[in-house]
Length: 184
Image (cartoon, rainbow, N blue to C red; front, side, top):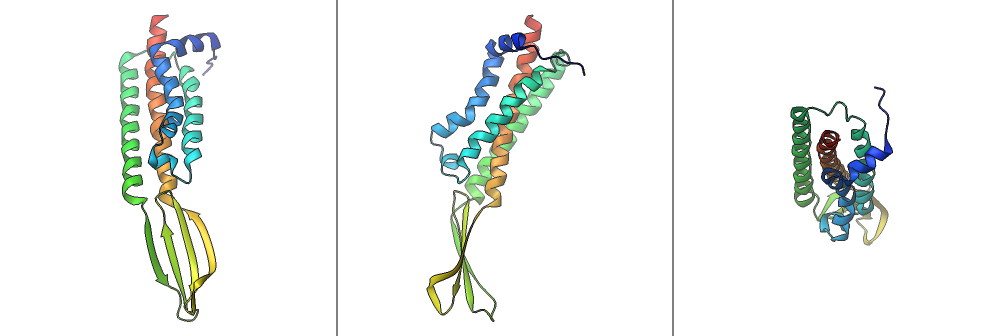
C-alpha cells in the first residue's frame, strides 16, 4: 500500500466540516450516556456502551484517512458513505428493537428433577442481568444456590449499538477525506 500518515494534513482534515462530524461521532456515545438514555445508562454494560464505540471510532477515522488516494472518485465515495449510513441505521434500529422488545423484565420458574425436589427461579431484568436461584421444595425461603449472569441479547445489543456508531464514523470520515483532498 505504501501509505504514509501525515499528522499535519490529518489535523487540517479534522478542522473541516466533515472532519468535525467524524470527530463528533467519537463523542456521541458519551453524549448519549450523559443524556441519561435509559437503554444505555441502566444497562449492566453501561460503561462498555461508551468505551467500545468510542475506541473503535477513534481508530477508524485515521485509518480511513490513510486511503485518501483511493477515495478520489465522488461516485465511489457516495456509494461507500451511503452504504455505511444505511448500515448504521439498520444496526441502530436493530439495537432499539432488541433492547425494547426482547431485553425485558421477566420472572419464571422451572421444576428441577424429581429426585432432587428442587425448583429453579429465574429473573431477567431490563438492564441485562439474569439471576437464578435453586430452592429446595422443603424450604422455599432459603436458596441452595444463586447465580448471576448477563443476558446474551444484552451483549448482542451492545455490539449493534457499537457498530451503528462506528459505521456513522466511517461514513462521515469517507466524505470528509474526499472533500478535504479536493480542497487541497
